[in-house]
Length: 71
Image (cartoon, rainbow, N blue to C red):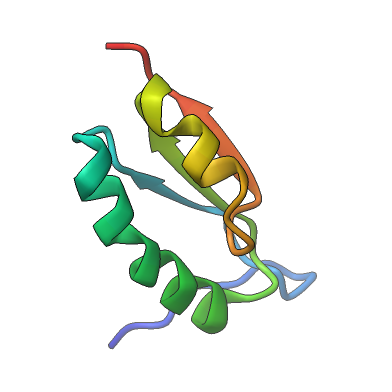
């Protein structure tokens, strides 16, 4: 597996996970977010979701930012 390139300060790029499917699909994505957090720390991790999944992701301990896409 390729490792992301890092910047001079060692933090590397932020990661954005788009998940604009239904709420059940967002729930199934949560283990991925935890795995990404463990592998990519200290990079920031953001997720893009539909409005109904916002509350679920805002409380997730591994997510730094929640972006809402109101299709």
